[in-house]
Amino acid sequence: MNQIAAAILVALGLFGGMLILVEVGRRIGARRIAEDALGARLGTGAIEGAVFALLGLLIAFTFSGAASRFDQRRDLIIEEANDIGTAYLRLDLLPAAAQPTLRQAFREYVDSRLQAYRRLPDVAAAKTELVKSVALQQRIWTEAVTASQAGGAAPDAAKLLLPALNAMIDISSTRTLKAQLHPPAIIFGMLCAFALGSALLAGYGMAGGRKRSWLHVIGFAAILAISV
Image (cartoon, rainbow, N blue to C red; front, side, top):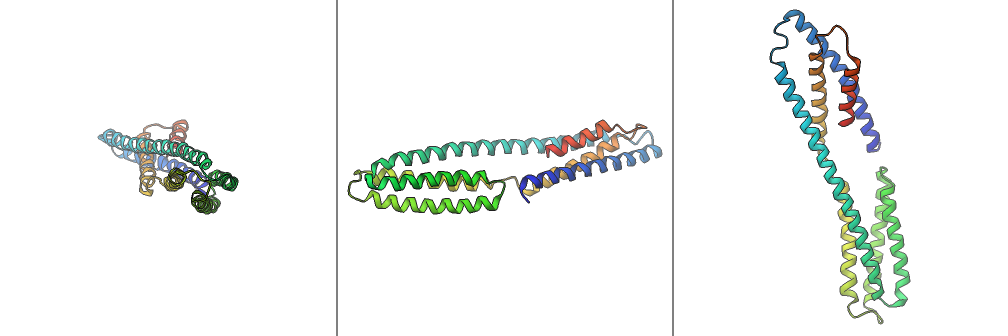
């Protein structure tokens, strides 16, 4: 199951759980009011405020981290494109006879890198394409080293081309690792737990009315489930 499908299932499960707990909280509140009408609500406002504030902070920090990682990954895309472009231009330093083969290898490499990310969220297919990219990196490096030492190469071919190739290879590894960075599972667990707890408290706070406000119940559960 890919991550998008898993996220949708978690959201649906959280939505259903919150609806149930709102109703449970409402019934607990109604029973408490029937037993002690005056004291049923004493002190609950401070507790509810603290729980909802903490839930809001958790969601805010999680969104902030997600936005930060998104910006970092976008910057890495630009950096990789620049590194590949630099290395491709420096192929001009090699003997003319060696350039066509390497340029074709570069085209295959760029296509492979694009396919690796286009195949997501199919992680298995993306990993297969990444293996192909690594093989092409090795091929390009080996051929470039040989060509830079051949007759007809510019005097500084190795000094200029090989560092550019190294940067191109390094940035691909950096992007792969960055793509695997996500918030720890405990963060998502805490978000779900606090969302369910807040639903219970919200239901308790709605216990005074004779009828349920389905607009508020469903809207509250849906908005929190989608946010999480």
